[in-house]
Image (tube, rainbow over all chains, first blue to last red):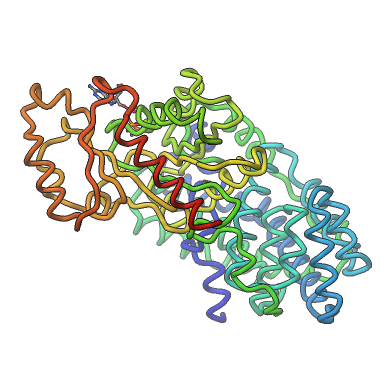
Length: 257
Length: 223
Ligand SMILES: Nc1nc2c(ncn2[C@@H]2O[C@H](COP(=O)(O)OP(=O)(O)OP(=O)(O)O)[C@@H](O)[C@H]2O)c(=O)[nH]1
Ligand SMILES: [Mg+2]
């Protein structure tokens, strides 16, 4: 993988991920994660449900962004940016104008709506948008591009930004899916190390054992790139959704989500 | 990959820029008096400056709740950020949640002149990133031991203002204030140190004066 994509996947990317546990703190609170085997089971389950959905959204966003990068002439770029800045008060419409006519299923706001539709928990939607906003700030600083600037007024979900960022950093849908899948797993694992005092060597050994599953999920997710967005996977994990809602109401918590 | 938008478009320059609030970080070990100082500064400055606060709480929203309860500012001027078990990460390595909070406050209050960002209590190496704070205060507690300034650390050595707080407790805990001040001066290269007690001076007069001057200087430099 290219160095740019490794930077994007790195947990040290200053994009706010450290304050989110990817559902691990809620699951620890609920008693579902207590040790390395239960963490592994949790990560496996999350990977093949919401992980697949996230990765497929990232892959779709990547394809859309690559299309956008190709269609932007310098002139179009200048006027799009003005649109994005002057319409910041009515973000969704501005972004729709900017992206009008591009991609498989419409503009960015349509893909973002697909992410909304696949995230039933309001707490998870808020967390995803907050992480999307932080990621957008970081990647706009690292890889400035009008395609990323155009996303600002929309404030999209994290996988949408991640897919676009991967494209701007030079990767395709498979890379976007891989980075998304890796983020799903690594953030949660490090949260578990902090919350339960798990042996970090044992946790990383477990993650290494999960690598084949991660690759398989990323490959499956990348297969959706270029297909109509309505057909993106919608695997769900209702217990994660419920735990996320409980967590958002909890008094004592270390992680935002 | 368009290179059309350089860093000139980034609204998060570290240096004070025209039209944006000065961001003041307040850091220091657990319980040293950061929230109490924040409250005192809000009371001292709220009538002359348009200001807001971001708290970085570790496990609860305790600090933000305290400030709201004390009604030092209206509720919509106080925001709590959660730091995922790592308070120093949120002010140093990955400042995005704090930047989001500052952005939201500035959007809500366009004339904002000062945003105080209180760090979660942390160790002596925790320093605010320049990408987040324009100026920073490090608060020590005399009851934490009078050898702390000698031990140094980035917070003690490099903060723009070092506050040695709770001087009223010095006689009870056997801390030597002169020693603390001189040890601090040795590592601080001329940067100011204030000995303070919020018990005997609830208005934090000297510190408020320093903050006032910092805001004034930033706005003078920007205009
Ligand atoms: N005696 C004395 N007590 C003080 C002084 N300043 C603060 N305190 C008390 O010290 C305790 C801790 O103060 P806080 O302001 O909550 O400390 P903090 O640094 O915000 O603590 P964390 O956010 O938990 O790290 C409170 O009970 C304060 O009332 C002081 O100058 N003298
Ligand atoms: Mg406090």
